[in-house]
Length: 80
Image (tube, rainbow, N blue to C red; front, side):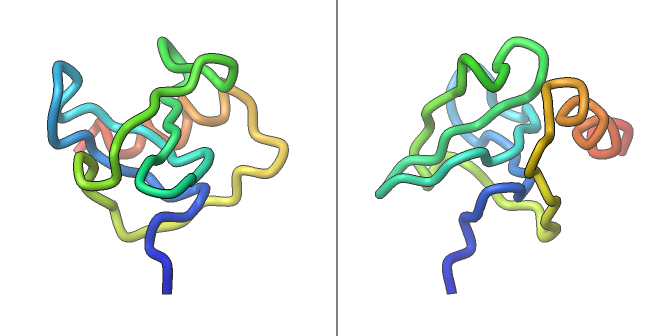
């Protein structure tokens, strides 16, 4: 079973954005494309290797979701 799926929230483990929350929008080979709704919008996705992100065991439906919806989902995780 593939654990990297669109709609799964992740935390960046490496790079200048370490510790930042994202939502997986797309998966291709060894890379995931991430959005946070603020800087990394749906038009400007962040490309990151799978080994540099940690999955949060929860899945969200992202069909029809816009940048504001992504921000609302990630707000839950940033409070903790």
